[in-house]
Length: 317
Image: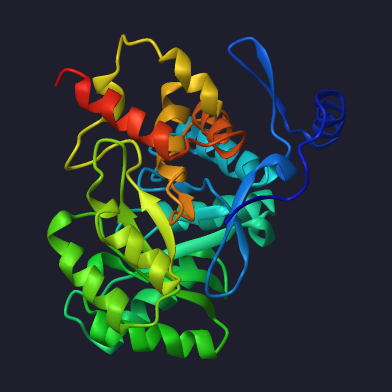
């Protein structure tokens, strides 16, 4: 169920509160207000905990210059300051875990963050799984992870029971699995039917709608929260922004409060009722400011979703 914390504030009150809390910025010359209680939320079915519908994916959080590191620090600081929470990372994302751990410690906003990482075990052994999770804790500078996910479904028979042991020890809150490849869809469906999962993570976008055929309906049926990776395109559908380069946003996008192509694409994803949170990559503050717009206002209804699909399929290329 889609929720807001409270009724939307009137513009003057929102700006006054946002000024007091640093949640006002300028985008394209216009004042943009990011009031945390105006953000759209969805509940995690297994617990009822509410999450904002936008988070950040951090595959590109291995900065190579001080300027890149500073830009990522600003994103993580403003992320939680704007009311967003989910930060998704993985040991395989190069230096992402270490950088995030350092930045959250510098900013002091670890309590506001919902950290999701992944466990890897190339040889599918329990010992590898333990070492992977312990190292993630060390790199992230925390003794607790909100969501631990089996990366790319490798070693689920060994790793899912291990993660549940850590849940019992209160070192982890939620159990999940991830994929971003069509060829793994049958296996994730099998696990969703046979295992007790709090979360799945899967690729889904306006250009890559395969997950909506079986995975998303099954998640709703089984009460499993869904993180969406690659909402702007990936291996299967390419960079979605490239397909609309030079195209004007349709006038009817205003009917669901989309003011940019990024918001158009994200609002399509978020309008699926099974989706809990989308995690686009955000390495610059401009990305965050634009994506925040997708977490506010109206979402497309069923008829509008169909219109968006038909529009997208009619584009050249």
